[in-house]
Image (cartoon, rainbow, N blue to C red; front, side, top):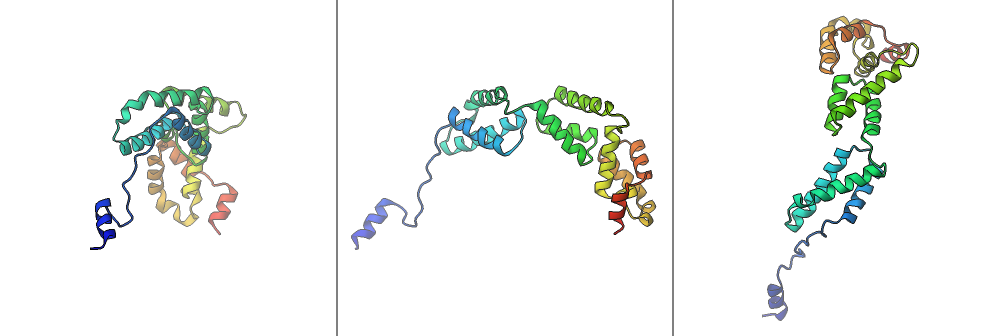
Length: 207
C-alpha cells in the first residue's frame, strides 16, 4: 500500500475541506469598528444600531458556541458612546426620515408607524411631528403638511387628477380606497382627488 495513502487517511479528509475555525471573541474594540463601519454607510437611530450590533454578536457567538446575551451590557455601552459622540441622534434621524417620507407622500399615520419601526419612541415622534407643523405654520401661505403629503402621494401613484381625464371617474372609488390604505382621511382624499393637477404633472401624464 502506498505510504502516502495511509498517511492521508490518518490525517483526515483529502477533499480540500478544513474544519471551520471559530471567529475571534467579542470585544469592545471590535464593536466600535462595527459601529463606525455601519454609521459611515447608513443613518440610524439608537435602536437600529442596537439591533445591528446584536445581530453581529449573535453571529459571532454562534460560531464560538457562546451565549450572546452575555454581551448585552457591551451593546448598551457602545450605543451610549455613539450617542455622546453625536454619531447617533434619534431626534435628528426622525426629522430627516420624516422629511423623506413626506416627499414620497406618506401620511401622518403611516409616518408614525414607520418611525416606530425604526425604534423611535412615541415622545420623539410626537415632538418631530409638532416641529414639522410649527415649521409649516411659520411660512405664509404654506399648505398643511398632511395635504401636501396627500397631493404628493396622488401624484406619485397617478391617482385622481394625475390620471388621464377619460379614466378618472371610472377609477374614483379605487383611488379613494388607495388613499385610505395610505392613511389619509376620507375628506382629504376626496378633496385631493377632486382637485387639479399641477401643469408639469398633467403634461407628463398626457405625453
